[in-house]
Length: 72
Image 1 (cartoon, helix red, strand yellow):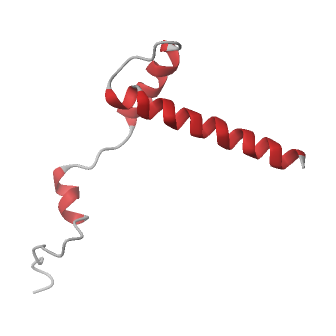
Image 2 (cartoon, rainbow, N blue to C red; image 1 turned 180 degrees about the vertical axis):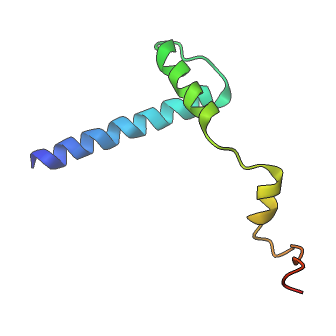
């Protein structure tokens, strides 16, 4: 019973962090109550990899893509 309660508490904390991230640092706003947490989340967001324009063509699922020279 105790492990279930601990895991559920961790899940709720993680969900709260995601909600706070989406509400403030993801939109570029400062967090009013805990600015240190907002700065830490902003640093994590800046460190995350981004999908560049070239990658978007690789992951395009519309079916409109160019065949490479190897496939021809």
